[in-house]
Image (cartoon, rainbow over all chains, first blue to last red; front, top):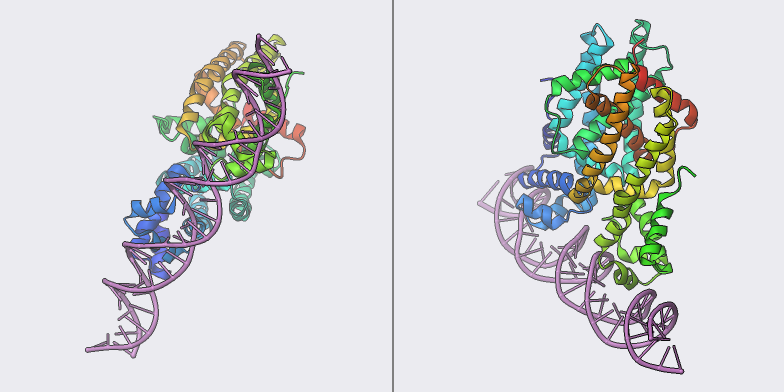
Length: 217
Length: 217
DNA sequence: ACAAAATGTGAGTAATCACTTACAATTTAT
DNA sequence: ATAAATTGTAAGTGATTACTCACATTTTGT
């Protein structure tokens, strides 16, 4: 199972370390669902309690504050599981040592899209709250710079040595790639939540072709 | 003045058509500022009143509801001024008939970045609320499909005929271009509001080079 | 078996929310 | 000049908010 659902993993992990209750589980599930749909600020604790089939006081028994509920949902996802999965992904991808950069980004994109699809809701909660909360940006920064940048630069330089990539500074290559990836993910999973693209395989080909060759004839 | 501040224009326009009051002006300015910073749901009307130096009831005298205040700020921006500016921009760009597609997107990007910078706050309010409010998506859809798509397809086809662009279906070319542009704008103006790129001119060159030629050697 | 600890909840609480009302001040029309 | 209309506000309103508390139930350790 290369791309296991992270929420399940998160919950499983939490269960071992701090043995979550049935009702706690239901609270978390309900909170993720409603936060993703309406946003943190637009969701009341009474609404979460109702959706979870639990007394409102139960939420505060376990999480203390509404803010802490949000952090309990999102921080483990950010701090533990994303970095672990990222490293697994990269080592897996590179151990298969893809012949071309194209093959590499094809594997990467497929994997990431699957990953985001499976964790769409918690991903939506995160993206929305990052815009409002400096604390989330602060949590994200090291994650991005250490995990993402560190790994990517290495890979970019490997393929540059092979003569597959343009001879530009690796951070610039990375920035262009990430900017496109970011636009791709946000436009398809955050903004246009309803009508997702029909033929994914065909779209993936176009995306890769654009990243590699651009728009010039 | 090719790229005049739209908020000023909006306010000026509103002043003529419905003669805005001094206090109304202050309310709108304060609301845009706080909405952009903290988001609509996290901002109370009492906070807006205080920032504007106005009684809370004054807001409701003029706008009736908090929701209507948001719409009074954002809808004119969406419905009147963006389309007008878009058409002006395109006719201006094309009347100078840029020699190459590269020149065209250079002009476009410069212009749009300037525009977004000048209207950064109202732009942030819009992007944040589009994620939560179906009504905003509904307002945006025709705007995007009529103004943006319509104009762009024409231009893409012009440059395809000139043999400057790859021979792909125009909607696909457009989709790749817009996806990158969207990622560029959101990552720089919504997420990383603080440390914007240092050398814009150099970055613009890299962006254009990526769009045209991709990452392959 | 049973005490202690952990979990769950109904019924609150004070604070804050968007919004209203009654009335005063100002502007506009004649 | 003055009546009418518009604009502004202090002081509320009920509703909802996140959160607390006293107490019941269940689970756990011995």
